[in-house]
Amino acid sequence: MKVKYFAWVRERIGKAEEMIEPPATVRTVEDLIAWLSSRNEAYAYAFEKPKVIRTAIDHAHVKADAVISGAREIAFFPPMTGG
Image (cartoon, rainbow, N blue to C red; front, side):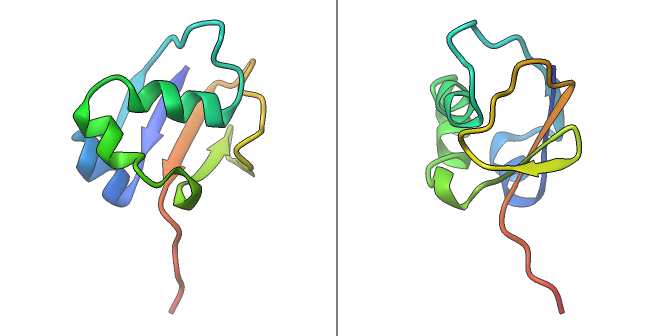
């Protein structure tokens, strides 16, 4: 699946997107964040406060308990404000 990172999440990880194949035990957004965080210090830093990270699966906003099975694209971004 393709994973996209936006704003400071992208800056902390050092890339805008990547293709990943998480293990079968990674079933939800929450699991995916935990798995990504374990990859290295950059990911751990980007996801150090997982509750503030927003997620979209195939362009639809989802919660941390959303199942990622069948997702083509998952995007992570910090909260945004308008103005």
